[in-house]
Image 1 (cartoon, each protein chain N blue to C red):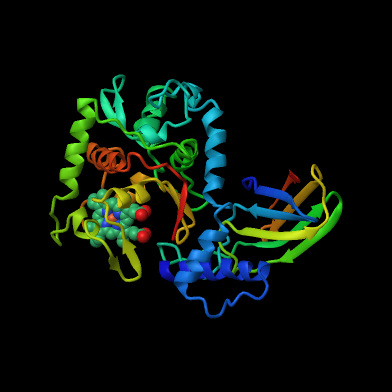
Image 2: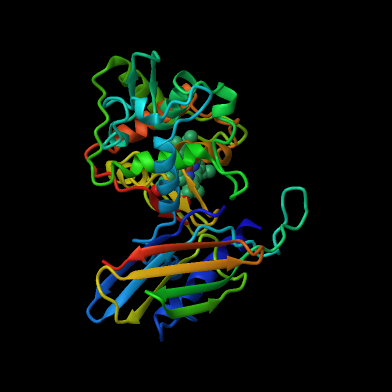
Length: 103
Length: 274
């Protein structure tokens, strides 16, 4: 199973600033291993973020995103103690969901 | 291949950065600027934290044939004490009869307390992707992180440590191999570089401090968190020397020399390096 994400969510003025680190290989499918065999593409395809139960961000990613991706964004609103939940799903249909409280 | 890989990483992350900072003049940024920007963006999102988190879990769990956790592992400040431990290593360990750096000590605890064979404990000293992860890299990152903000304080009062320091210093200046290189060939003058990579002058306190206090580090080009043993191992390769054996006296001597040269500086790792 995938490792947990590291999520930080902070209230800054009237918005919530979210920073998340994900643990993922993000193989492009263009790299060969030491025996010369292509390492198959393996990447996070979708990311979804909810604030309490409302969706505030969805993203579709490709193989150009780096290994162990870092993403930061802001959304309007949020209050200390609210939940920010992030889910990613990769092309193996593996997924990971983690939650942080807004600080 | 490695250079293409690293370029993709920088471009990939720059694309994210561009998305978050609308209007940034992304097209003109040189590689150097992009790198600096990347480091800045990651200042509070260093992927090394993923290794720290994994190491923290491992620290507490019963491990090995004897089901013993690292909480009985003494890094020099008492069993299980991690706060400030990295900043005072290497040091002399009477129970082992050796001067040890953090990584060597972790292996010692795995063998002598948890019951692993030495071969099992050192099977994956350096990780390679999520399929071949290194427990030692994660544990080292976790313990080092607990010295973040602590002043480097490697004591040379013990004669064994002093000897290691002297041998390490000698090794640093010892020229040999196919190219007649020493560490000093690349690291004893200011403003040397190989292609675009600046080489720190490790014989000056400032250079040694800046370098030592930021390892372990997330290597962007590799997508891995690497330790000081890895750094030395890779410089042995660059120097065209034989493989440096993990935890060997020579590796500890060089670590002692460089760690003590960093004394007085505040430890600030794990860092992030291209």
